[in-house]
Image (tube, rainbow over the protein chains, first blue to last red):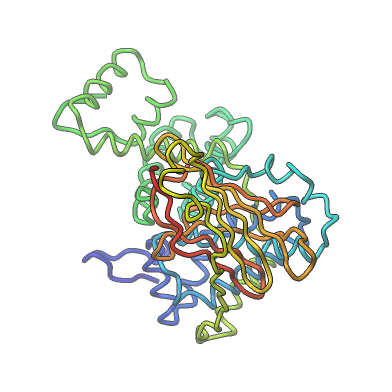
Length: 199
Length: 208
């Protein structure tokens, strides 16, 4: 699905957050799915970092998604949706931990400070989570050969050599370099369209 | 690879540059081009560096597909976005301010740390503002008045006067929290108690 944007046709998946929210408010179910995919890792990783179980993280994810749906029209700064999601998710984590009671280990003195220290640096941690989620989403928006190649180059540990990548993708080794160039251009274009550069 | 002032650097070249994979001569050409300066290539370099940093530090976890699907289905099952439900915010009242207790003569040479106490029916909020070199440390504690001074565990956010959340933290098991190196300005402190918010509004952090 495409929407006319700045006199060119731009895929819905690469619109910046503010325009996706606008599309959601106009009833686009696809825009809603794209928003969730874009930030799924951000929302899900925060409860795990707080030491909550996967079961609780699932509940936090659902709660935050419902809160996002209910408050789409009320978000003050639509270009900072990531920050809104961080605050909301942390709040939901707190509610979850309160339900567990005051003796839960995640509330031990200093434990939260070690995981997510309060102060200016903790905001860097959440900004990093936000960016990581967005980059992953952008890689996911690429077509199959680019998505597979960049996933191997960026996220495989250890990074496989080109001959191994060529084998996995069933392409000549000599084609990896030019393909990487083309795929990287596409990825950076997607990120710029999403507003990644302005964060 | 030719790099001259008429062309810009492709991301692929910038990636090789950042990963130190360019031969010395090509590397010099890239650095000369960036130093012209080429704002577009400089911006692209910064963007690529941010992406690579994100990738390198990525330990995020995706939710199980069924969990994501359930969340996506919220938009399918509820066609209309509901009107936001009312949210109760209680503004805490100032009951003590050390600045108001001292005469102007006494403030000269007196400690610059400012102590304030705010209260609602449910909680007391003790605040301490410590000026530093060009900014302030804001330290505080929230205790319940309903449960004999018990510490209150809550999420605390520091907001601008327009409601933008600038920072957030949590109270510890003693109900204490801290925001360090806060620039001068006017802020709201908002405490999320679950069923309501408690706010300390118009908190002015000054350069004494």
